[in-house]
Amino acid sequence: MKAAIVVGTYYSAGQTFVNRHIRHLFGGATCVIADQLTDDAPRDGRFVALGDAAVARPLVERMLRPVWRGMNHVRHGSRRIQWGASRRAALAFLETHQPDVILAEFGPQGVALAPVANAAGIPIFCYFRGSDASSRLRHAHVQRAYRRMMPRLAGVFAVSQFLLDNLASVGVTHPNSHVIPSGVDVRRFVPGDKRPGRVLGIGRFVEKKHPLLTIRAFAEASADIPHAHLTLIGDGELLEPARALVAELGLGDRVTLPGALPHDAVRDHLKQAEIYAQHSVTARNGNTEGLPTSIQEAMAAGCVIVSTDHAGIPEAVSEGETGFLVPEHDAEGYTNALRRALSLSQQARTAMAEAARETAVARFDNAVLLQRLEAEIRRTVNRA
Image 1 (cartoon, rainbow, N blue to C red):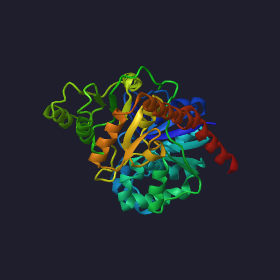
Image 2 (cartoon, rainbow, N blue to C red):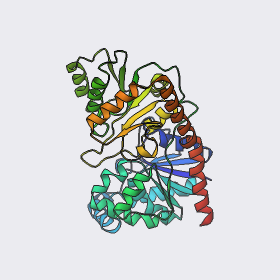
Image 3 (tube, rainbow, N blue to C red):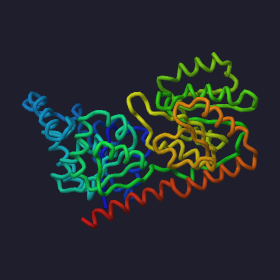
């Protein structure tokens, strides 16, 4: 079986789940339809860009662009629908590569390509992963576009039940829906020599991750634990405010903010960390997590998780067994949870770390999850 993968931008190093599907889904028998291709994308014919900047349109189409986009908005609920030259290019690409199925990796990409897939007679599936099923749902036109897309799909996948419930709350449902997390490579993310008191967080310094709260909570929780150390890896708009807060609190020797790091370096940090801390919250624009890959990686590396009762996180972390969860924005509760994790006996910490690792192996092995995805796609296609 062969799949066409639909994405926004390719290549994006941070979209590890997309890159894994392109390399490994159905043994790597894939081709890629993107809005745009970066300089790092291969130019071997398996990749095509169909965004406005990538498609040469005849003059008449350029003149009629507002009309076409308006018509698509009325008919499909979205101006993103492929039309004219980009639609012809998509159909030609599919005719050349003859995929058996199409997998749109995000909601907006599914909306854009579903009519083309239907015209080509190729089953199309859509994967929801986070903001596409949270903050975007605040817009009535997105809800309408998703509702109109659903009958055109052969099936839907989401990384957490939370996201499927979010979609259902605005009337976006599909009878063939499945929860399949992105997962992690549990053979590469493994426990190492843990450093006592080492706390780690990974992710962009943005509102949804609430890094400033994590820094303040660590400062209070570790006040009587001098060997404790916090490292927050990532960059983003809140990195400089975070560095300013570290200086203000006099934590320069106990908190490290190295910015973004290569994946191998991140994995080395996880091997050494005893505790993984991430205070995920719903951003003011409604953006949420799906099921953070970093938490799955931390569990595979044998870290005790300290996080929030947010999005799909409770679907992964069991309170008191593999970590501690508190309500969003509960600074006092989060501080107490960190203090509790830092104060665990060696026996209790080892038991929780082993339980976290066992959960990751049993539920988040990306090789097994890839097989599940392939099996569900095959089952749907064969049934049809």
